[in-house]
Length: 67
Image (cartoon, rainbow, N blue to C red; front, side, top):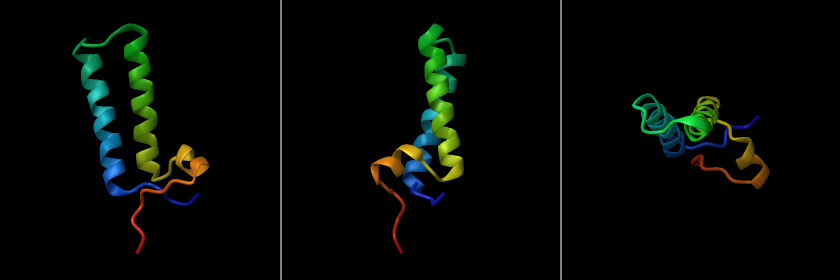
């Protein structure tokens, strides 16, 4: 599993997760939409922590800076 996420991509994914959590717990979103938003945010958080996105791998995308 080769790393394919750059720093900016990881930061954006973490921010999306945090925004989803804040929106849900502040009761801005609720129901199916709120839960779906949290699930998507959680997947983004996990991919940023692992430095690997399976979808990027399938599409042949890498946002990691080359040395």
